[in-house]
Image (cartoon, rainbow, N blue to C red; front, side):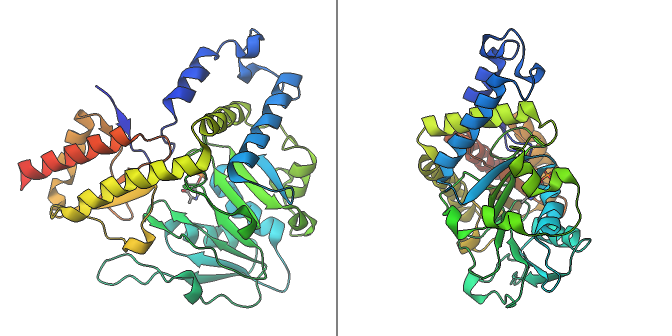
Length: 359
Ligand SMILES: *Cc1c(COP(=O)(O)O)cnc(C)c1O
């Protein structure tokens, strides 16, 4: 039986990459040892990380105005690193809130700096919706504007980017590399690796070089962008295996046509699933169409007493990890880059069969 893993994170990775990693697991680059067992300062490893950064720069078209850092502590590590590095004494960190992750970032930021939360949710009758970017009430003075383009739990995606004199910071943990973006529209992008990049723990940070001059607040060296930039993300021992696997994922992405091809693939997948849900009166999606996520598709059974039955039969059919987050209930299919169209087709076929058998 083919198994499809819809886990929100850590999530499935491309099978091609996993097979290659398995093949070279015990003998990386003919060194006779695993990539996990070599020094991060040894030549083969240094060459790998150089190529890894170059590949990500090609994939996202990142200019020389930006540093690319490979840091520890996943997405949440950056919830602390952002205010610690970007704090200004005379302006608040402004946090745009459209769901559970962006609110979490605000809460963490408040431990370190003055924060101002801007709620952009406009839900009516249990239907999720958000204000378009032009209507966000951003204050004039801000040390930075933080927002989350894809709310992984709520299934809400923001396709526009706000404009402001303050640096624009985006938590792209669950949508990086899923569609084309213009990096120049941002000043700091971060993404925990475990959704579209590789193993958890690693976090990619793309930061405008001019921001490295900010004094910020006293902070641990491992969360200091200027130190990490100066040290080539090797101030301390980096998560070497995660970094290696990220490189393999980037190389694979380039080989299949890059982010443009991936975006087409993702739009096709999401359309199949949303179209089916919208056409059904057994299931529903509560997110307004203009802000539906390409990566995380929450859906609800009209009769939620069938939830447990749905989940156990789905699992028996090889469709894993479809339970929604406890905060929003229902189901959630996370359909990141690595999920093939066949996985969506299998899910829709199962959902349709379940609906017919239970209505
Ligand atoms: C998964 C996720 C995180 C958290 O990442 P960790 O690596 O667990 O800290 C943060 N933000 C968003 C949007 C996420 O989807």
